[in-house]
Image (cartoon, rainbow, N blue to C red; front, side, top):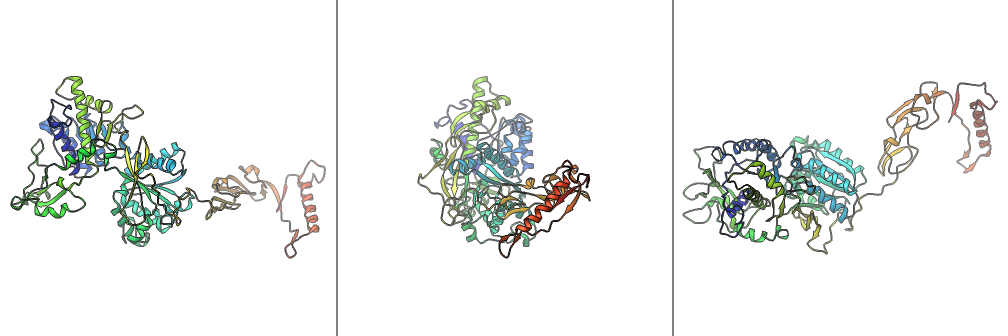
Length: 621
């Protein structure tokens, strides 16, 4: 309702040439519109896109299309609209996948791509906090996976080391969840960027809490993106329900359910971002626009006998959804708004059940409550952007009709204005005229204090041009440490001993049989385990024993040819008395005598024992 209301408000203000608002845009042209309910369905959105380019406006087609809501629906409808070269602009589709102009050639959008969440996170991690090591964990859906890729690319460009790149399904098996978080535990990095849908985010945090890498004093800082920060109630449900995901496996395999108090405390020190909903710091016209928006006539349905809104709407209007209402049946005590689109279809009177025998229900906006969601301003600016492009085409061609190619070209190259969400234009900084918006991009940066789970502390605003600007220059971030200090991005671990590999501490693994790492430290991998004496191969898990009767005394022999015919000798010669702590000089002499014999026999050029074992080497331990 808010999104539709934002678009309709722009159309009304552009068409009104006496209100002093956009009066010079399309001065001799009227915007007409038809409304379609995409019903949050990709299939329905595609069908409606077909209608927009076939039967809409009496078969004369739409010049442009605004919407639908969501990236998946937008991708579906763009398959149709791009085929007919119809420009499409979104007020809510934010997947980075839509930036591909080969796949989605007529698409533009007023909100920023989710790629910017990754860019913003890297900027804050690296340039605000000075951390250079990070773990990335994401869901496998389009929003999460594409956003994580953008984050990782930005991290690479900024010189931030990606210690782990992890991905889980949107409804992950509990075993895969455990494996993913184990990888966080085994890393020595304590900064975790997470981009996943709200329910998946809750499952990941729940598993992380059970493994000790998420919590008030854990020392691990989690960066959250808007899918989680704008749906904290859903995140909380995934963390507290006994059976949070029936599709994920047996309840017994789920990480232990948390209490709400535990969830709130564990969130201490989390950092993240949320969409900007108050654009007053970015647009000089935003405050005046919100006042005009709120002063419109309510469309929620009126009670002609008692006055005010319909009785059944009162409870709906008091909830968080604020201005939306869909629960008031038409009748003597409830009359729906009579507003219709250009095809005569009611905007705020809906057949809610597909049954013509039951009364329609009233649905609309209670502007007077002052509630407005974050996407209504983007919908408003989307219509203004289309109007600006159309105005340019009219001036350039002096035509009353709109060529689709010219409209799209004008959108990409000529539209530039201060909208209610800030500066709007679509030519990107590489100069290749993508439909992404690269100016006026901003996010709220938030920090959690560990008290109420769903309350996030607003720290400041990050913009693509200026980075993070604090609301309070003296703000001190809250961190997940016992003393409140900012954690280091890496844990200093005890070195792995000889014959092990890993990052240190408990994350050390013994080399496989037949392989050996002669070094100790924190940076060795399986590749540093070379083949031991008596073995040959590439190292690691690829070491084979020399054939019977042969041996190599060298470390790291790559080929079987290194395995020579050998006589293997064990030397049992004492040289140190543990009981007294004294060396035994006699033992040293005996050992030296034995080794001397071995060396002279093995040397076939010294004239001593050269005819003894001429093709065999004596090796010894």
